[in-house]
Image (cartoon, rainbow, N blue to C red; front, side):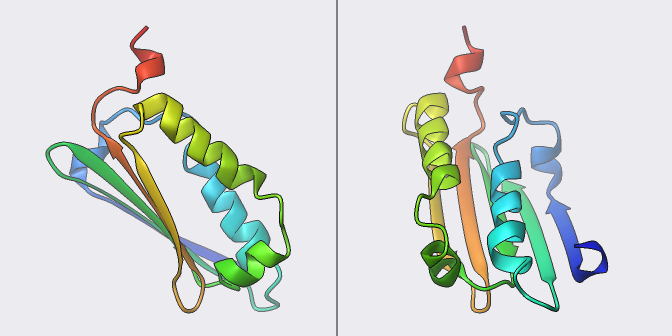
Length: 123
């Protein structure tokens, strides 16, 4: 997308040294570009915000693209989101959450995970 894509990353110190499963956020950012921003002639922006409290980490990925409802209607299978749900469930024994909402304009995805190491890495 070249100059049509801008981004920002804002991460609290509380998340910088915490483990994060590989490829957890990348598919969300990729979906935002592919389905939300790339179809817009003028492109857009992605914002990634990472924060933590004593027991959880929260990741918010927001774009100012087409919005989830319009993008979802163009991609009915939703493989990326189905994979995200399954990975969160398996890695965190149901303790992780995610939500997808319209950001007006755009889409917001919020993922909250426990600070502890994922179960697949405990073995």
